[in-house]
Length: 179
Image (cartoon, rainbow, N blue to C red; front, side, top):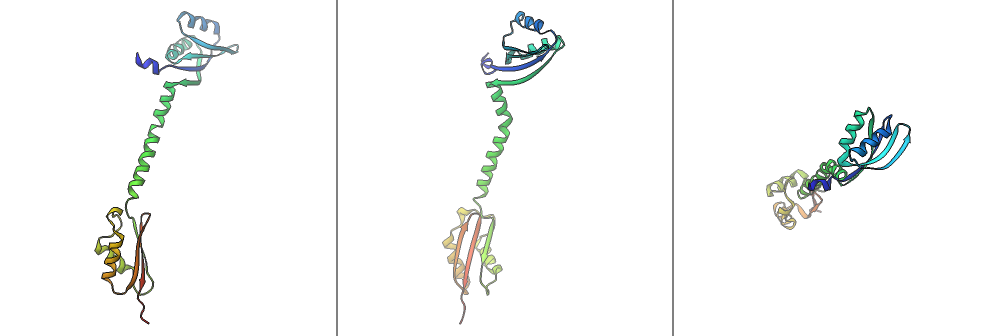
């Protein structure tokens, strides 16, 4: 009984039947409420009915050899039906945003910028020995500590800068150049 309040809604239907008066009298006899009855032409009726009466109306129309077509529907039951159809789209969008946010908390690339003498492979090897590699969490990275460790490992480095930009760890190295 509580769901009947949710199922309240109106349906605008188009009924094509030869004997329209007989159909309206049948609705009257069966106590089916009909609103806004308009006669489109000799064999076509436009009328508004309750959602709960639709099955009975359809049955009587088909018994009399007519056709019924839904033109417009409104009410809470139709709104909830549309939301149910779109629920998977909303859930998918929220999941997509959550996954993107989660993946953005990791380093996915290490970019090394050097001048001439030190190959980037050595810097990457040193970073790997420290424990810095793609797929590591940003929270576990201390930029200042990495800079100190890299300066202590190689004597050819004049200065270096390690920064996290997005999901990339950028390492810029300046070399010592002997005159």
